[in-house]
Amino acid sequence: MTKSRTLALGLAAALFTAACSTAPATTTPAQQQPLGKVLFGGDSIAAGEALPLRAAFEASGVEFQSIASEGGGNVVGPFSEENWPKIAEHVRSARPAVVVHQLTTYDWGAEDEQRAGYRRLLQEVTGAGAQLVLVTAPPIRPDEFYAPHMAELERVPSVVKAMADASSGQAVLLDASAVWGTSYQQQRDGKADRSADGIHTCPQGAARFTQWLLTELKKLHPGFSPAEPEKWANSGWSADRHFAGC
Image (tube, rainbow, N blue to C red; front, top):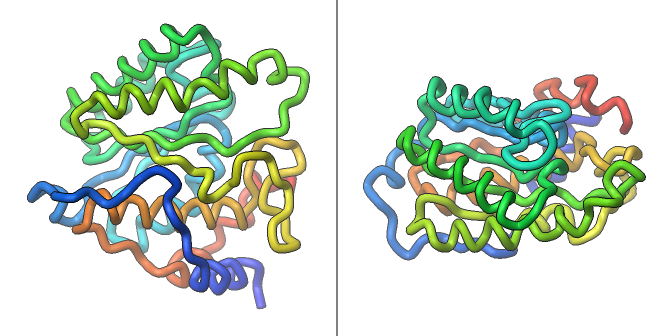
């Protein structure tokens, strides 16, 4: 049995519960329609997750584009001013229905800087006629590069949640601790779930995240019909170089 087939079987049996999101009480006519194009952003963690996501959305008949960036993808923090014009242009040119942005490991800065960065992203996304779905990043095992900034990174979800709660439904924050837990865990069920580098994901973790995100988007957009894991988990993406540390 191949590794990817094992992933498919495990996912088919798994049940995921969202930690802080619920199905909307009412849905708009647009949400009842098939899901439009999904644009996915974030840092190098998201770039790895984009591999099974692309396979899953293609299997679900949904157009998908990743703008997740190695060493970047952030709207606040180091080099964000240089990154921002590229992110904004991608949002405008992609014409997405939904922009899914995973909070990054570079989102450090003062609280008002974090708030301003994500408000700018919200304005750009809504200006393009799309919904912004924000997703918390997986917990990391900080090295000397990250250690001085952990308090700032740990504050980001609360800052973003307050912004999303005040957005009248234009933005929503999904808490991915339902997938990752609240602390870095390299192994899960006896298999590598996260990279040994303490930051990135392994194929098993990326696949679990994909299945969870599809389920959450189904709650937000009941017209979306996600493909079963067997349709995308064994399509070859797990051999990508992003998972070399696994």
